[in-house]
Length: 449
Image (cartoon, rainbow, N blue to C red; front, top):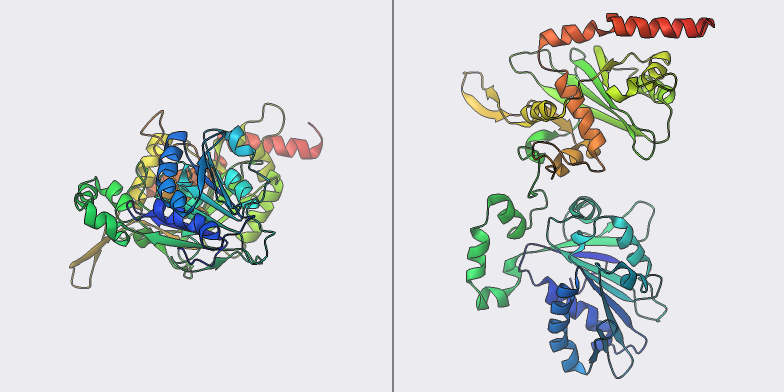
């Protein structure tokens, strides 16, 4: 971590890995070893109490090298040759705001997942710059899995590439890296407090995986605990022409997106396989244009059965409904069942590894889930992995940015109860509601209304 060449470094994962002490050393290197008189560092912690703890530990190191600590207005370390390290905490946004826009050659953010969104992080990152020749500006963040910002931190640092590997966004010179740490990386703690690892070993399974092993895929409060990227995600393959195709749409315009998912279902009812093989989303796109895009994308899909859509699309109190607009554009849709709790139970059932797989001799080989997801459907995968229990109703899923993809999965799941229900769904366009809707569209086209 101390030698990381990246512009942005995330260090951590498990508890007890020496993140705080490592951050103290990393932040102080330009002041202690290089003695840059114009060096300015910034350390940010979640609360004033946690900041006070950091200051106490940093004082032992920095003041032994000649620094002087002043506590007002915020704790600041100053060296005789001019180097300074400022501190701030996230609970006082106004206090932190005075540092935004200033130049800092090194910024350290402790417990990064306490930042609920990327916005403040990106503002702090914009302050990481250097006008000092020979001193490159860098940012270090430390954290454990979990917390309000778990999802965006994981998406930014953990998901893009393997640990300890330098990553560049396409077309960007900026680099970042995730360096994992475990308690075994901290020999001082292992020697001085050998009982601590026993405490970690006795935690509940999910918490133990996150705190001891630094597992970012294990979330306390995760809704779909049966979901596994190993079992539920697969590499893309050619969908057989005999498989039935279904679509599910969750509607949005802005800032919420419109989402469409494509599912393929095998004809073998004894070993029914379902594959989510395609996802698309649109922002600021009209219902008619979304419908045209869906039809174009589906041009080569065989055995298209039906498309279930967000029931809110049928609301047309102030004019023509979004559902009518889609159907006018040539996309037949039927109203999805929007029941939430039973819908999530159906999704649970699709994700569970309860389908028995036998060999040619009838011997059980393994159990597999009904639903597989192509690894190209990244937003749907993350929407399932990141879903949390609602604080208001533990049986429900809490609202979050990716829930539109998850809602579309639920619409599909509620429409897949049985073959008999498939038949009923296929007869949907002949329902009284659909006949009335088509009659209204015909009258509108003829100029009668």
